[in-house]
Length: 318
Image (cartoon, rainbow, N blue to C red; front, side):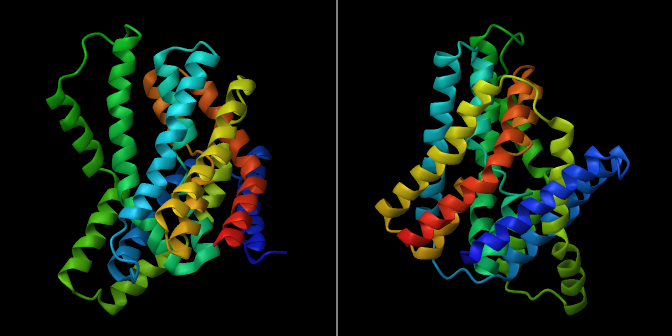
């Protein structure tokens, strides 16, 4: 058994336990929401803060890492948009939902415990470099394409002005707990100050539960979303997410000559399934909720096997 196989088994077992807990009503339905809120607003932001403030970044500027990962996002997003619109005859808003669903990896709730479990703190440090710009880029792209889709489909009334778009984007960005954690960590790092001992222990304790709780909460959430139909469309998007996106990341890593750990982290991150953000954007657009929910559920289940395949390929190639 490859060394990473045990981590994959642990990660997806925790998700399955969360799913089973929700299915058999072991906990109150609101418990899952509470756990997700804690993970998203407290535990993960503190983990990102501490990682960025204290981790050693030995590979220099992450331009090649960013280029590798976001090239895979662009190719996969564009392919999903085209397939849903041309192949299934859906409208522009559904195309945006398809792009997000196929190109938006679950880098936080699944990616952080997954990458740290396999590659340790150095891998988590590299993933934090991706996360630091992933959310702003994906949020910005979603907002812009959201307005374009509304205009293309003749819905939503008058389009927003550029000023309104930018101000709305900035409000969402600065109020996001993950962005706050990243910026605070960057501020501490640039200041050269050390985190006081007691404060660091408190932060480390809360951050330490981020991984297992995130996976458990994700399983609970998946039970709430589930498979809602449109399976053929969802399978097309899941295939792009789990196979095309990591394949593009692999090709870019080889083309740009990424160091071994950077290449492995980029490929592993690209191989992860979509998270709840795809459903949230679909809900905001008012279309594609069933497609996003079904894709997220099927993709997470299939990723238990497909991520192992890509990790094995990355180990062989690098």
